[in-house]
Image 1 (cartoon, one colour):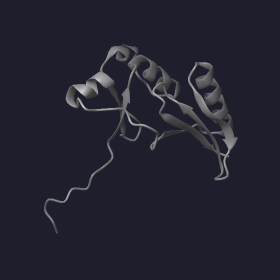
Image 2 (spheres, helix red, strand yellow):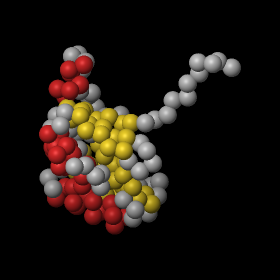
Image 3 (cartoon, helix red, strand yellow):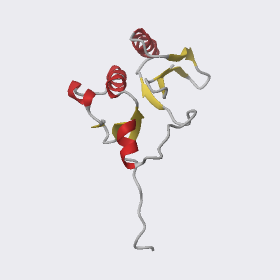
Image 4 (cartoon, helix red, strand yellow):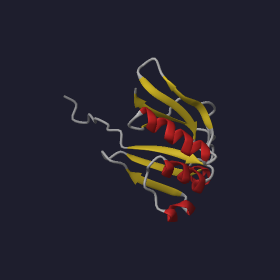
Length: 133
């Protein structure tokens, strides 16, 4: 057995944002408890139930240690939030789009047995809303 073997554990998901206040406002509507004082910070992180951390960094913060950083083009990863019920998906969709955030796919009954919708956060990242149908 290799004495240097490491078993990694997913600990944090990081999101790079152009406007911290707008991004945190969006994620607050998704039920993430973020203090209002965090809106002006360059780095914000919170520990979610279960121990996974979610963090936000401004573009300027990331470029301070990686001057070559450029935003990704296209989307390959999305965060997904369980809304509990199909009606919960519809209600959260209405709340987010009513607050001015971009709706991408309106709630629909997916063939895999879920009520599903997709909204974009202020930086265009897809955020899935779902519940068992």
